[in-house]
Amino acid sequence: MAAKPGWLTPLHHWRPWRLAVVYSFFYGAFVALTLWLPAYLGAQYGLGLRDAALLALPFPLAVGLGQVAGGAWGDVRDFRALRWWVTAFVLVCLFLLSYPPFTMQIEGVERVLTLRYAAPLWGFLALLVAMGLVMGLGQGSLMRMIHRDHGSQLALVGGLALTLGGLFGALLPVMFALGNLWVGIRTAGFMFLYASLVVCMLVMVWDHASGAGRLRALMGLSPRVSWGCIPLEVGGGYMEVTGQ
Image (cartoon, rainbow, N blue to C red; front, side, top):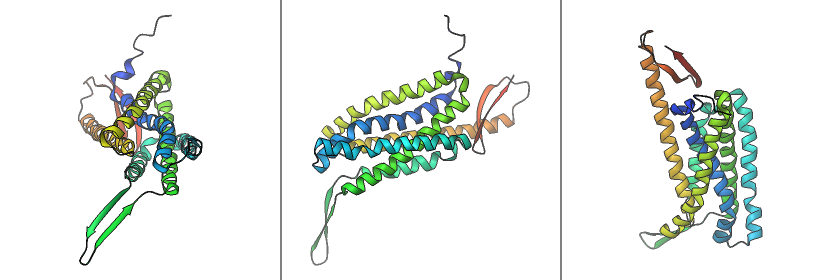
């Protein structure tokens, strides 16, 4: 059966790729962390494999609950209404999780002050579960928005998002191992995730700024100008304006 002509047309626009790039972070980070956490907990806190696996279990459960809540949220609002809150919260969590245990000495007036920091196991797990819940919220609302805005091309756009997420998830364990080897710090994996999320946020900022520019340009277009399909973000919502 021959493919329908123009079935790849949605990929000619930036919008599906933007959604796929942001979704790939949440999905890929979820998959990679789920696989990596038992080994990390065992090495960082001296736990056996069984105990480490049990303590890592709340993270994927939190992501699953967040996906359900995010899908329900997406029925009322879309991801744009909470994208900055989601990414900012996850960014703060990754920043805190990136801190390795350290000792700092400060020369005081009369003596040397020694400060030691090591995240307690309960604090690490609490932060991880909170981050997983918010990651799932963003992941579920994003997929719901893909379904709503690209329902007729859901297999294509959703498949693109899952493919990029799978590739990112496959790359992360390699980067985690290389980070431990090159940096010599076990939390290097969280540092790499932090840098990746910063890139995603820059993509979101660029897309937001370019969307505002397209809207200003559209206001000055002549009705005779052929401008095709222009995705616009207006008041937190989305619409596609089509003309000839």
